[in-house]
Length: 59
Image 1: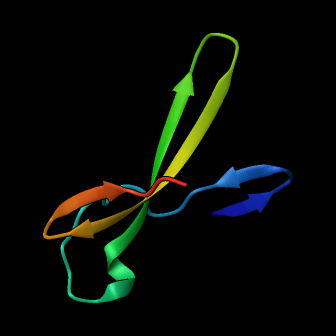
Image 2: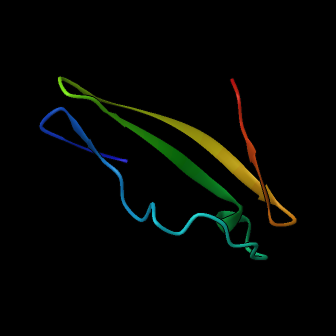
């Protein structure tokens, strides 16, 4: 995530799940964008991938 002028920029969010052997590739970020007539909001959650199955990490 990059911040620019108090706005968030998310990169490479199109490729969701690939089960690869490198530990760096087993973590990701799920971004939810909500668009309404008067507002745009977003949330994000971290996840891990184990045996091709994503698991959301909760605080």
